[in-house]
Length: 291
Length: 170
Image (tube, rainbow over all chains, first blue to last red; front, side, top):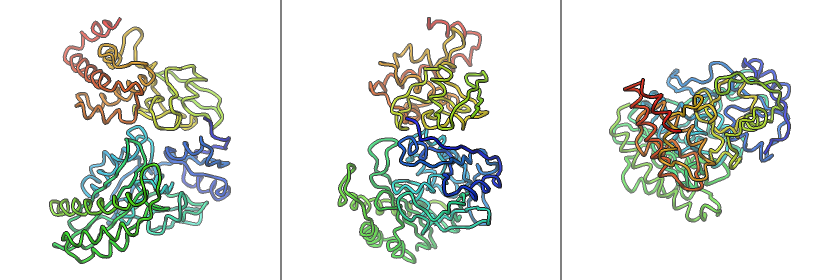
C-alpha cells in the first residue's frame, strides 16, 4: 500500500521547521517516528500535502533533568525509555508501562512525544502522562508555549496544538516524596491496542496521599483523567475502603463503548479492578522506595 | 527525490517519490527480495530490517527517511558462502516451516544476540514478540536462537574454529 502523494521536508534546524509550519502548517503533518502516522497514510485515513519530518532536528533525543522535571525530547523513542536509568530511578511507572506499548520493533522507532501528540484514545502514553501531570512544550515562530496535559486532548486524534506549532518535548514533574506508580493493561496480544488500561501514580506524605494521578486508556473519546477519583485520594490514607471508592469513581467516569474487545459494562468493571490493583501496587512501591 | 543509504555494507541510491516505503525501495529498486511484505499494516514483522543495527519494520518507514543511514537485510547475513551463526541455528534446529517470516525472525535475533549474547527463552520470546510466524513454529525458532547463541559463544572462545564450523552448513 502506498500513501497518497505528498511533499516531504526534513529540516536540520528547528528554525527551518518552524518556518515551514508558519507557511504551510494547515496542509502539513509533523512526523517524528512515524509509527502511527505512516499506517494512517497508507490506509489514506490521513492525506496531508506535506510531511514535515523532524527526525533530523538536533538535541531532541535526550532524557534529562531540569528544574524539578524530567524533560523528554521529541525524538526520544520508546526504547530509550526502556533503557533509561534516570527514568527507572525517578519515574519507574514509565519504564514498567513501556513494555506494554506496541512491540519491540515499533518501540525502536516510535517516540513518546509523537505518540502523545497523535492523541489516539487507545494510546498508552496519553493516560500515563495524565497520571503524571506532564506538560507539553510547543514551539512556533511566535515563541514557546507550555501546555498542561490536562485539557490537551480535545477528541480522538485532536489536541490543542496549533498547525504552526511543533511539540519539542514533554516535561514531567519529579516526585518530591516517596512515590510509586503502576500500569495495568488488558490486551489480546503483543502489539494490540488496549481493551482497557489504567495508569496510577501516587506520592506520599507519611502515610497519607499527597498527590494521586489516574489516567485511563480506551474508555472514552480521549485518554481520560479520573479527577473525581484522584480528588477522593488526596490527604487520605490508602485503606481498602478509600481504594475501593476511588475505583468506583473511576469506573463511573469511564465511557467505554461495546466493541470487538468487550462490552462497555465489562470494560467499566476492568477499570474498577485495575484502579484497585494499580493503587495497591503503587502504594507498595511508594512504601519501599524513598524519593 | 534522490536517496542514498548503505545497504549490507555498500552505498546504494535511487530516485524515489517521498511516499515510497523502505521495503518497496529494497525490493523493487534494489531487487533485494529477501525482505518480505506480510501484513503491510505494521503488525507482522516479515519486513524487518536492521536500521543502524536495530530491528525496525521497513513497511512503516519511508525510503527518504533513511537518507545517509545504514540498513542490513537478510541478504547481508551470510559472508559469501559462510552462513552467519543465526542462519546455522535456523538450519540446524529447523527454525522455519514455510519460511516467510524467517528473514525477519533472523534479523531480530541477530540484533538480540548483539545486545544479549546469552538470552533466556523468555528474553528470546520477548525479542521476537513483534514478529508473527503463521505456521506457529515458535518452539523451533527459540531453539534456533539458542543454538546460534551457543555457536557464537564457542566461536568467541576459539575464534579460529568459527570458519570451519560455519562452513559446515553446506
